[in-house]
Amino acid sequence: MDKGLRSSPSRRVPNPDGTGKQDRVDRRSVKSAMLDKRWYVVSRRDIGYLRFILESYDGLLFMRTVDAATGTIEVGFHPSRRQDALALLHALSDEVGLAPADPPRLTDPPVV
Image 1 (tube, rainbow, N blue to C red):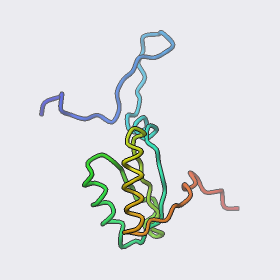
Image 2: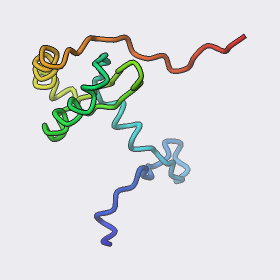
Image 3: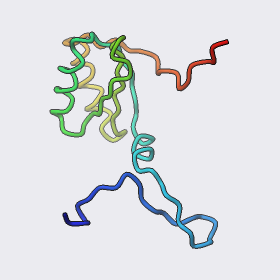
Image 4: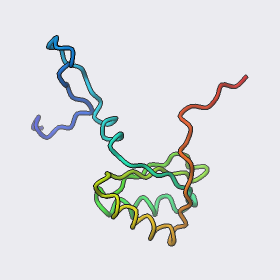
């Protein structure tokens, strides 16, 4: 396999303190921070169909299932594609019944 074609989840970047050392940066977190995100609730039976439709637009939107039991999904898109992404989501909301949802909590409160 050609090393130039291999994808790495992290890369080395120069350390800003001037020591010449390099820090590792997780590319996935950088890419995730660049996306505008929306959360929706959709029927559980439509999650696969919705994923199939969104993936057919080849990079316009990215979808992940946050909670399959409740049908909560997260949709992300690059800010430069905002107009196209929101237009598609609006069209799909009529077809699939996307209902806007609040972002999920990062951590649950401790059980006492």
